[in-house]
Each structure stands twice: as C-alpha cells, then as structure tokens.
Image (cartoon, rainbow, N blue to C red; front, side):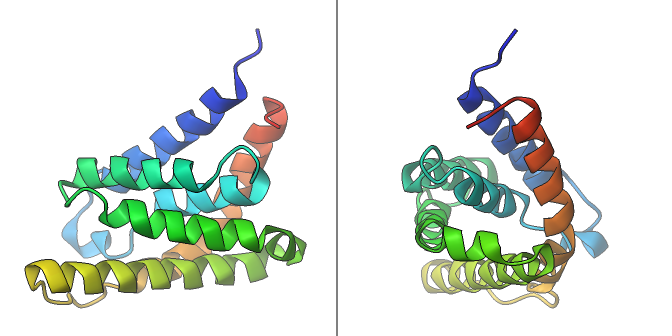
Length: 159
C-alpha cells in the first residue's frame, strides 16, 4: 500500500510539533532544539516544489495555537525562514552536513531573536538565561534529523 507523499510530510510535521511542546524539566527546557523549525527547513531543502512558504506559515500557525501565543507570530517567522531556505536551497544542499548544521543553527538563532523581539514589543517579556542555547542543540541534532527524514523520504518515495 502506497501512502500519499503529503501524508508522510505532515506526519513528520506532527511528530515535530509533539517534540516541540512535550514537557521537559525546566533545567533542560532551554536546551530543547527547535524541532519544528528544523523539520520545516528539511522539507524546504528536500522538496521546495512541494513544501513551500504557505506550508511553513501553516506550521507556524499550528505552533502558535499549541503554545497559546498570538496567532501569526511564528507563522510569519516560519514563512520568512522558508523563503530564505527555498531561495538558497541549491547552495545549501551542496554544503556538507556539518556546514548545513551551522546554517540551521544560525537560522534557529535568527528565529529565536526575532521571536523574542516581537514578544518583547507586544508583552514586555524579559530574556531568560540560556534562551539561545537551543540554537546550539539545533546544530547538534540537525545531522540526525536530516538523515532520519531523508531515510523516511526515500523509503516512502516522497518526491
């Protein structure tokens, strides 16, 4: 039985959403990688014709709904990240996996900074210690997520 390719993509997005909102001890929560952002980046790199800015925007809206954040903050940031990745997908694909990991960490850092400044403007939140640590763990987890999603994509022949 062949599973529709879009179902595979959205199941991986669903798993990333679960990992993104799964409870963790407070001491470890600052190290949580941006699972959804990394997954969106992978699909933008692997299938830019199938996973586009609108899909990334929808993922951000879903994350806003799960976090209880104002609807649209993550949607806009995810759409901007996706447009950057799709615009440069051929160049990023040609880099080694570790160079891609550094790019993923940089994008994660920009995502977090943008999210913080928007929330600071709207709600006057303060920056917690270790807020940017998750960008470092995103660098570490990118290769594993990349190879896992690539194996899944090839196994289910998602094209």
